[in-house]
Image 1 (cartoon, rainbow, N blue to C red):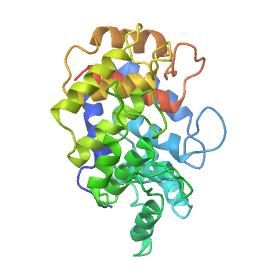
Image 2: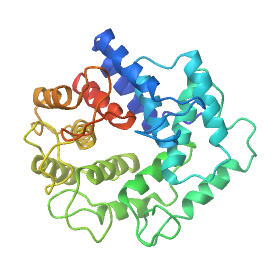
Image 3: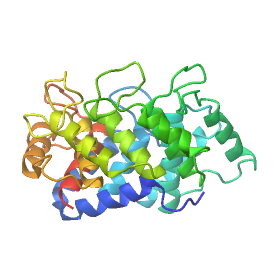
Amino acid sequence: MTPDEPYLLRLSNRLATGLLSMAPERKDRHRGFLLAQQLPDGGFRGREGDSDLYYTSFAVRGLSMLGGLGEAECESIGRYVLACRSQELSVIDLVSWLYSGLVVQLAGGPDPLSGAPETFVDAIAESLESTRTADGGYARTTEGAAGSTYHSFMVALAYELLGRTVPDPNRMIQFVYDRQRDDGGFVEISPMKRSGTNPTAAAVALLVMLGGMDDELRDDVGEFLGIVKGDEGGFLANTRIPFSDGLSTFTGLLTVQDLELEGVLRPERAEAFIAGELEFPTGGFRGAAWDTQADVEYTFYGLGTLALLCR
């Protein structure tokens, strides 16, 4: 499995470069937190429960950012990834599985596709296409009647990790265009009227991947992100949410940088929000100021935001 620099790998390398200047002892605290969430089967958990591909992917991304994966980590995570190959996976879990497997393989671990039937990748592609909807996007399941901006982005990532492209990309581009609203942002599903930071980030990433971004859209997105800028220094999920959070701040900042939008966010205030409100001194990050516990996913977003700010 050797796709040419898929989006998630490019982003991983970019974030790792951004964290090169972080103090070693600070890195060690966060690395220790992430490794403490690993279970004996090699996978990682969320805040409770068993190993989960979704959280394992975030742990792999976080560990990669903090200096790479060692031999022991590659062996244990690779074992978990291989054990999950025969499972029927949702789109999100499939992307998590493909990404984790690729990173572990590149770090010296096993190829997650080693020994798989020749038809394995074709079967995955057929499974992805079974969730395509009449509007040109992709739904979460085969029962979905309308496409989801986020799941369409996940499908595009999955195809990239498989070394393929989305079939009929022009339909996907039009699907994304149809999810834009008058405020300049994008919604998750068609009935929604109020744009969100995270659907907007997914839409922008999709349009950039597929060659559908233009200057007018760029300006629209810049105006929307100015509306959802939070008082704390980060980004709100949408205009009805009164506080910034780690996920929206990461995706919003990533979109600002990718579109080269100037003056939308003050870097020093964003850093103060992430480091002062969300980072635990013992390691790990929480999702928002009201949150009481760190987890693997929000630790990735916290580290990722700091990495972007250090570019």
